[in-house]
Structure formats: C-alpha cells, structure tokens
Length: 361
Ligand code: NAD
Ligand code: ZN
Image (cartoon, rainbow, N blue to C red; front, side):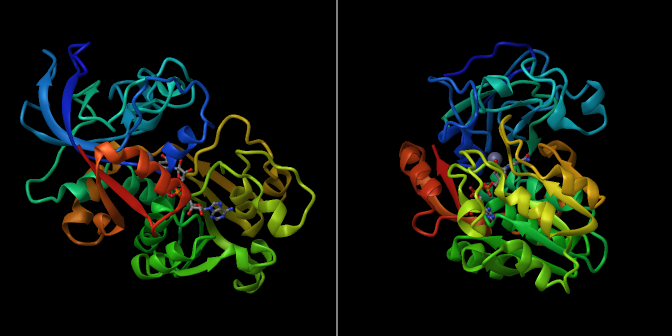
C-alpha cells in the first residue's frame, strides 16, 4: 500500500490498467536499472482515495486519467507543454521526465499495475474522467491515444500526403488512424503479424502489408509511391527484442543485436527526399546503427519524443466523446490483475490475436 510522501502526492485506487509495448522493453531486459521489487505499469486510471495537504486540483472520490508522464507543471519544459521532458521529476536523466513504473532511469517511481499507486504532482497530471466516459476508453487516454496522435502530429502531415507507419501494435494502429485527422491522403501500415494487419485495415482504414512477404520493404514502399518514397514515415516499433529482422529480410550481412533499429533504417530509407521521420518507438541508449548519412543527404527532418499526454488530453477527450476516436475498440482482452503474468506472455508472444489487454484489479 503506497503512502503519501510529499504534500502534492495523491493515492489512486486503480480501476483499469494496461500492458504497453513499452513494458515489453522492461520485460525483455532492455531498459537499464530495472530493479527487482519495482512495480511496472504506466497506463492506469483510478479513483483518488487520499491526497497530500497541498493538493487542490483533485479531491478524494474523483475518478482520474493519470498521464504516464510525471511532470512538475512549472519548469521551463512543462511551461511549453513538454510534459514528457519535465526537468524536475526525474533527476536521473537530462533527457526525459519521470515515467510511472519505468525503471530507475525514468525516476524509479512505482507504477499502476497494482491495486493502488502513489501519484506525485497530483495538481498537474491527474485529469477528471468525464462522467459518461467508459473507463476502457479513459485508460487508453493515458498513453495509446496521445502517443498515436503525437506520432501523426510530429510527422508534419500535409493534405494528401502518403504516410507509412511501421509497427501495427496499439501505438502504430492508433497513429495510422490519427494520420487521417491531419489530412493524410493515403495511410500504409507495415508489420509482420497478419492478425494485426487485418485488424488495422478495419480499425484505421488503412492499407496494411506484411514485411515478411517482401524482398525489401524499402523497395516495396518506393514501388507503390511512384519511386518517390513516402511523404512521412512513423516508427512505432522501437527497439526489438530479437533484432535480426533486417538481416533475414534483406539478406545483408549485418549482425544486429537485441535492441536493433530495423524499422528506423527502413523509415529513413523509405521516406522521400525532404520528408519527415517521426519516431515514437522507444530505444535504449545503444541503438546507434542508424543510417545518419542518408538522413543528411536526403535532407530529412527527424522528430521524436515521449508523448506529452497532458498537453493533448483536452482535445483527445473531445475526440473520444465526439466518436472521432474509439480507443476501447483496440481492447481484445480483459483480465483480472492477478493474471498479469499471463497477460505479459500473451502480449509479448502475440498470442490469441492480442492487440491490447486491460487488467482490472
Ligand atoms: P507492440 O509491441 O504491441 O507493437 C510493436 C509492433 O511492431 C509489433 O506488432 C511487431 O510485430 C512490429 N514490428 C517489429 N519489428 C518491426 C519492423 N521492423 N517493422 C514493422 N513492424 C515491426 O507495442 P506498442 O504498444 O504498439 O508500442 C510500440 C512502440 O511505441 C514501443 O517501442 C513502445 O515502447 C513505444 N511507445 C512510445 C511512447 C512514447 O511516448 N514515445 C509511448 C508508448 C509506446
Ligand atoms: Zn504505454
């Protein structure tokens, strides 16, 4: 049972929590300083059951969306809406702010795959869930919806653009759906799991292709874009547990180790000259096998970030309430929290046509 440690803390009784592709980086041992005894989980919603004496924006009994970033709300970066890059919440890093349940490199805060969680800076992050909003929609507003949306936003999509998304996990599927909101003319999703590609054709209204059926995904994308390349490419894969896809697909003699950046290679090479590569996939510190020469020669713009959930929540809550986005449509499994280990196994191995699993304590 977590306790209030600071006057701005709140304790949240968790009502829904999810497993994210980012958790798989921890699960696969690719995030340094992941300590035994820490609680995972950065996607959760719940009810406030206790507040510190300086908490004024929420009260006991409120049901809240808890953004995955922990942000002070007052530093140079938070004031610009860069809540994912808070300068105060994570003293272990000069790059990223703290994240719930995401190792000591992200602040060492316990996460929300639990019955209760301590929420620091409770005047900043927690956002009241509208009374008529389904908790299954709300929990996907803690990360998946804003991350998919920010991926599309960072891609700088112009009206009519062809947008390619690598990765048909929840993030890539949501990014593909959000690409239309920014005016895309064509959206193409690439993955290796046919069930996810089938799902995405219906959910994201996109074309979807399996890279295992291509000789070379870069050539494939060029071919279907009149040899120009895509206008914008989104990397929604990040570090891979088994980083040998590039080797097996292109036959090149590259020995890539766990945590390779295959999708990012493809993204840089498949985007048109002067195009934009938007990176939301998470990489560890050792993913340096990036074709930076091509990036320079082609005049690319590359953007990436942890998502600033809080900045996007007002407009995304509207989009959910207006039916423009349907987050809970991504949920394929609902399990009790006690079955969390099975949930990880299933999501990691892509079993039982799993897209997104919600756990109920
Ligand atoms: P996921 O593991 O469910 O999905 C990843 C998908 O990528 C899988 O379907 C896999 O088959 C596919 N894939 C693997 N290699 C590929 C390749 N070379 N080309 C195309 N597809 C490939 O994960 P998710 O929950 O959708 O998350 C996706 C990524 O986004 C993860 O790296 C996660 O850490 C990251 N993420 C970032 C943020 C952020 O704030 N920037 C937030 C949430 C998640
Ligand atoms: Zn997540």
